[in-house]
Structure formats: structure tokens, C-alpha cells
Image 1: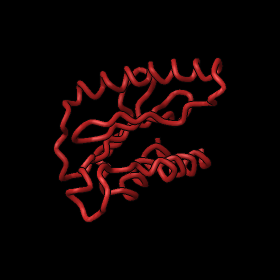
Image 2: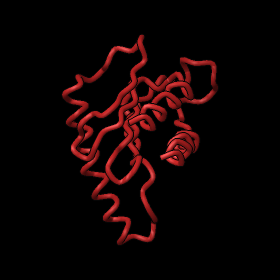
Image 3: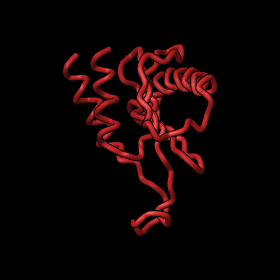
Amino acid sequence: MARYEKVLDMLMDFDENIRLAIISDTEGNILVSSKRDAVKLQVPLAETKRALKRESDDWIDRCKAADRVPLGEPLYHITSFEKSKRITLPIDAFHMLFISVDNTPMKNTKKKSYGRMVEMGKLLSIVDFVNTFE
């Protein structure tokens, strides 16, 4: 569990727009989580657990499809809502990382374009870095 906690700590330090980060198993059970103190959950925890189970099932299907399609292995999945983005990615064969990111339109920030881009390369690097210390 220590490496999973390290992943969550690094993610929360990396980007202040990450509202919630969860590591779950393939059944959608939450193993460890980290939430910003000032953040109020937008979705009840029971619904988030159901979403984790659905996402886990979807990851299994995506990985099976990757065997049939020349696209390669799936890396991550982003679902964008008006108020937040939900990102899921496999941590290993039995665990998934779920991240909820603030989706503040850039017109409300000091940046110049609309929408908030998730820096997936950096997020994947954090996961890969921590996985090297298994």
C-alpha cells in the first residue's frame, strides 16, 4: 500500500486542480484515497464506487480489444463533464487509478484558451516512477 499512497501524494503535489485521487481494485473497492481539504465531493462516495466498478470492467474490455486491434495497449481514459474531468488508468494488472480534476474553463483563469488540458504525460510519469520501486 505504501507505493499507492506515494502515487497519490505525488499526484496531489503535482497539480492543485486534482480534487480527488483513488486507487481501487478490480471490484471497485477503494484501497487508498486522497482528497483536497477544501474540496466538497460533487458525487456521493457510493456512486463513485459504482463508477469505479464500471471503469474497471471497461478496462478489462479495452485490454481485450487491444489484442485484436493494432492500436496498442490502452493508456488512460478521460471523461469530461462540465465541472470536472474523470481520469482512469491501470496502475497494474489488479489496480486502477481514478483522478477527479477541476474543469474550470480557462476563460475564468489567466490562461488564453478554453478548456483545461490534463497533462497526461506527467501523470503517467509519476505512476511509472512509483511503480519502479515495487
